[in-house]
Length: 113
Picture 1 (cartoon, one colour):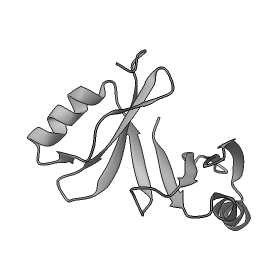
Picture 2 (tube, one colour; picture 1 turned 30 degrees about the horizontal axis):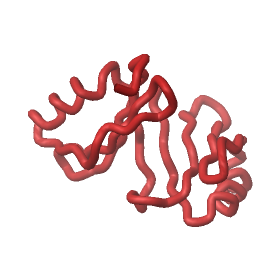
Picture 3 (tube, helix red, strand yellow; picture 1 turned 90 degrees about the horizontal axis):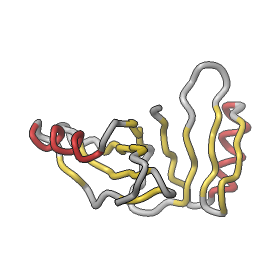
Picture 4 (cartoon, one colour; picture 1 turned 120 degrees about the vertical axis):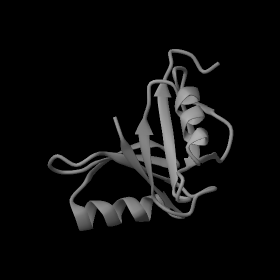
């Protein structure tokens, strides 16, 4: 399941903006993260406290991050950091495609090891 990420300096302000402008419904996940449910058939995403990335990012769900990273690197992409756990059974990593665009990879492996 693909999703998008929107970084924000002020998560509450950004949440109000996207709810008002686009009619999206949101659910607060924690102090720095809000889940977004767009109207209609659009993909969902999140608004999160701005850290390393300063621009919106598309995240692609893959079967196994290591396999996708190997293919990505073999085809001209590069990894932008370490694979990180997300909860107990999910992981993510940012990468660049062959054109220098940042994308996120996400998997649910059943383990964070």
